[in-house]
Length: 199
Image (cartoon, rainbow, N blue to C red; front, side):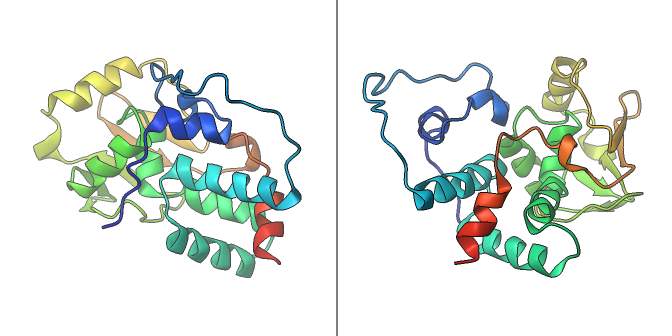
């Protein structure tokens, strides 16, 4: 399976986003701190940067991202928002949003290792699309893993998006609605991505 192994802080700085957006609150970089020369970006450069930003945050590579975009085009409503909604509805992102994992990368690994169930059935596909009414829980055999306890304690005051519900006592989360654009805190202009792919 292809993976993006670029340094988090370095890539985040290049894209102009804070590592905290990805869940990395202690990562910073001072590399090339004096190299930020202000240049006027071309329209294409701005469009490309927005696409790279979204791919980086959600941990999606180009082929899969293109597939999301093509599905978003066929859906009713705004293509850019539909694209973001699909990415938000990925199981690994939902696991991260519920506070089971400290980062989306960690959430992806946890899902890959089969630690979660969706409506009682084990799912180990990070890109699995969740829908309203689905229940996401840690498998009984995985509940004693110390990392889950650490993350849930650290994220005790973590703000759960209003389209999700979480029962910390039973370690069970539920998708209660479809996310709206206001629920997505990613600083991105999705219209630029649509313009890029529309060429």
